[in-house]
Figure (cartoon, helix red, strand yellow):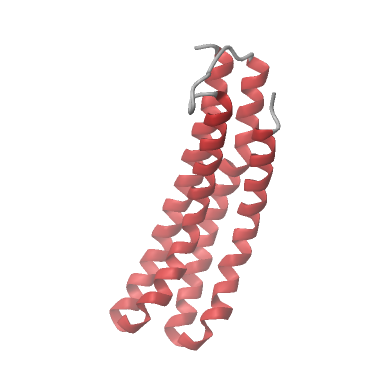
Length: 156
């Protein structure tokens, strides 16, 4: 394996690990709030579960970029060959947006989801409005996903 390939694989790993960590933390934060509401109002299970799941998308986005990068590198589907250090660093840089933004937005979407779960505890009929707050955080994860996908697929 060349150093270029190492850097490219490092980029794919960064996308998956950081975005996945952000989702894990965010889902955990929202899950704590959801568990508190469930102890008092178990009939809100479906609504609080949806709120808890929202921060999980960053991990999916990171995984998607990781798969695309591995495919482009040739690890998936075969054909992995020599890669220059410059190309490997380009892959690494292309994976950074979703990794970093996924980490940060996953945590903050979890916090926002927890606050929205608090809204549902008091006003279950406000589900649609409550969902808008964590959805706003999601916007930035989607933008980072777009940049990473366009960057990874544009290399070579």
